[in-house]
Length: 116
Image 1 (cartoon, one colour):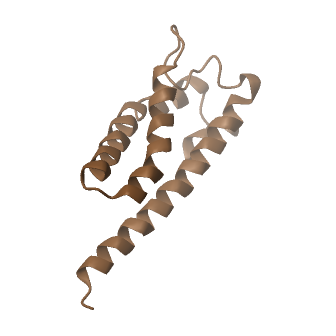
Image 2 (cartoon, rainbow, N blue to C red; image 1 turned 90 degrees about the horizontal axis):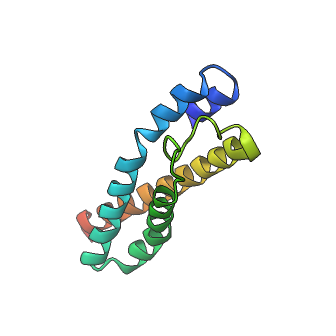
């Protein structure tokens, strides 16, 4: 979010912004896929079903990168057709999702450890 807002305010150029963001796309896809599979294996159905759409979206977004683009974030296209705004909106939604998951995992951890 910070990198995208820096690009929006012209504090950094599009190429450096996209290279910074693209560096984290593959670890994000792998990490989210691993967490989703672990929830399936450990039979936490609700959390698995909550994570499945986000993991699917991340994989779809990574697979559907047009050939010739630098990655999911492309410096030649990020200012076109409102992509910057859509990337910013997607980042905010993911931030909310990860905050929700953090507190759900924390509650689950505390409820298992705390004596009854």
